[in-house]
Image (tube, rainbow, N blue to C red; front, side, top):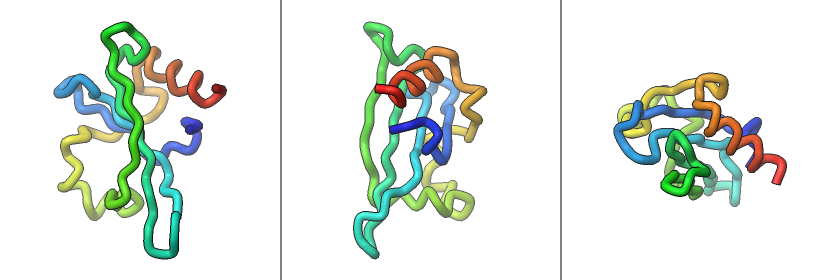
Length: 98
């Protein structure tokens, strides 16, 4: 998934091993079902002990984020791509060209 398609980046300030979350734009599967791809990663996702996972969530109302933030506080605070650690940015850029 190209990082340009990312809708939101989050940083939970190291509370969990996968402290960075990228939520991509929703993909409409049917008129009633939208799925939201996401990736979670540690500060050094490609290191031997790094974390880098992908998944999808159909119930995530991320497009209405402002109204639903209370349910997603565990993701941490929103941030910009430029504010992510270099290893995270590099991993996302390499994934986009793979």
